[in-house]
Image 1 (spheres, rainbow, N blue to C red):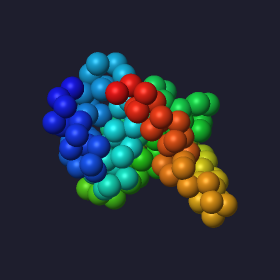
Image 2: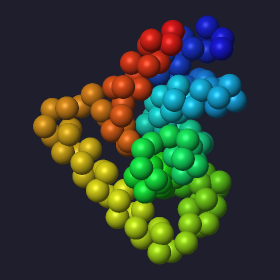
Image 3: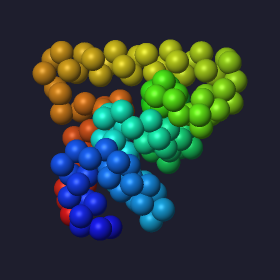
Length: 142
């Protein structure tokens, strides 16, 4: 990975973060991809949110299947709201009954994250609630 791109990503360049995330996917490092795509998605990069959602929905990230799918749906919804057509298609492919369950679980995840933030535990500031552990992995990988 180019040092220049990584430097740009580290300073908050969401396009560089997205590019690094995609590069990590192609090399098979999905956990590092999770970090970079998450940073980019939180900055409003719809394609990053879509890729991240797909990784969770495919079971490549996250824990229990339903929880991982719920996190994936939240990322896909963010991507769709940002105009990502692929995310819209992925969301439409989820059967309605499954979507109701995942939407409910996603709401629970969001409420738990909100409670963490209110209690002062803002280290885990991403949708999955695993932010600080992921950032530590990226720092260790450098």
